[in-house]
Length: 72
Image 1 (cartoon, helix red, strand yellow):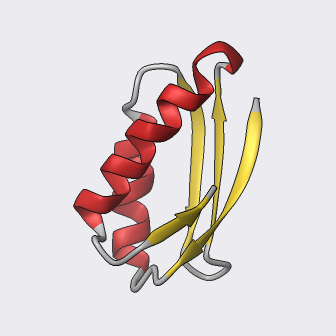
Image 2: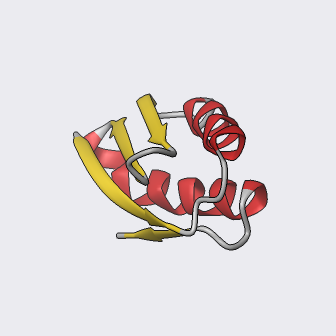
């Protein structure tokens, strides 16, 4: 399953790169893209685990950029 999410208050490209690298390490994630320029995130993950994976994605993003919000 591939889904796109809007990001709010992503402050820098470096943070976006760190978020993307961390998300790709989550088991079940097939691909991830975090764009600072468009303030969007694309996640490709296994359908049967998607909701659980998104909980982990939110947690990872909060560690890298505490002010950033993911519009689910």
